Length: 75
Image (cartoon, rainbow, N blue to C red; front, side, top):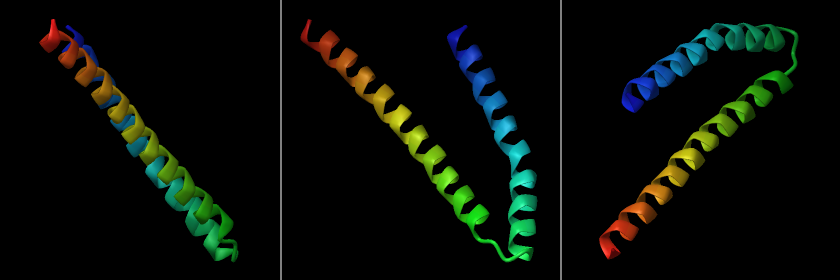
């Protein structure tokens, strides 16, 4: 049951992420046409922050799994 719920959450999050791409592209294109580059740089920083957060979460889950695995091996 947990696997099904996890799978559904991942699919939902993926669909939300894809829906934002056209909005970001239109925003950057309109800001570049007016000569401003701050919107594009802000979006790049936002993308990097989202990327880092995913790796931090995965790393944390990996550490928790490893500790649980080692605890079971010792006992």
